[in-house]
Length: 195
Image (cartoon, rainbow, N blue to C red):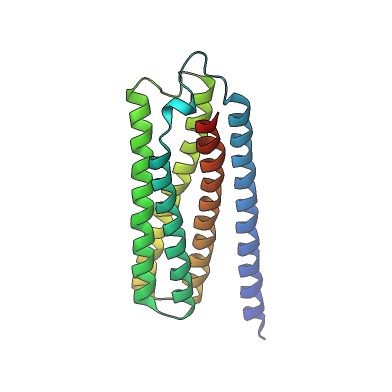
């Protein structure tokens, strides 16, 4: 193996390691938001609680959409490893649309709460809710931007080793956001309606 090839592989290993470190720091960020929510979930100060605010069928629809996007993202990576460029673009296009639909539902929920007078300033509970779920929404937005950029790169340059590595990291990021959503669905919505 040549020196250039060895240097390239070392750089790729460092990039992948750095990405895993990023995901771990993001996990710490979300853990902090979950801890704050756990402390403030009963701090409604006479305002509404999750039991009166949350609609489980609505949140279940969001969850199904996001989990379906994770499935299509996984299929896109399998297609990328098989060199099926058009299938990769189609599956990532589907993932993008599902992610956009999820984000639209999340924004709809936020605007509905806000216009009903239940904004983030109303109580500690709502402040923690908007912070946690809003941070997840910002990550979804970043993932959608990244996905759009990568689809453009694959369309123009194909499934190069560089693009394949970036698509793999994008897939890891997207699956990570789905895992975080499962925790949000359970801790915020299911326990919020049950309490």
